[in-house]
Image 1: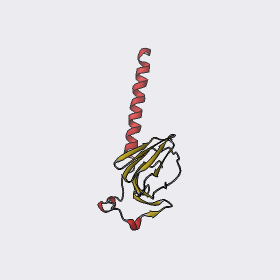
Image 2: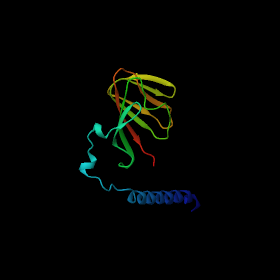
Image 3: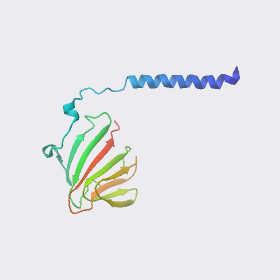
Image 4: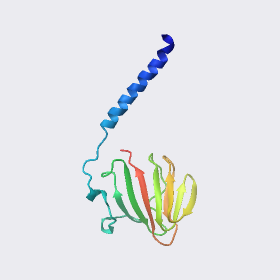
Amino acid sequence: MKIFSPLIAAVFIMLFQQKMYAQKVETAKVPGNYTIENCVNEFDLAQAKKTNSGYQYWFADKKFTEENTLKMSIVEPGKSTHAPHRHPEEEFFYILEGKASFYLNGKTVEVGPNTSLYCPPNSDHGISNAGDKDLKYLVIKKDLR
């Protein structure tokens, strides 16, 4: 009987973990006040937030979503929203218009429209406008509440 003890213990632990996971799924936050009207967000310049480098428009911020945010940033030529930085969340940029200078962990590359840029967790990263027209890009980030 002692030969099977580790196997029985492993099965018991697996069953316990499955039960705990099932309870977590049952108690997960269920979307509350989401409607077709507030789930569709069309860009409105009047609702954009002015910044030192241009403006930002939040399609979905952390007050609205379950865990992800979506923001559009417009950056004037020669400017950036902030200096290179790091945070525990991963982040995506998607270039819509203009020319971006993307900094990641000591290296820089210039890219244009229809390019995605990935920032792994805890990496030094930054984005700035490397062109002579406004840079427009989306920022997609998971909110670690």
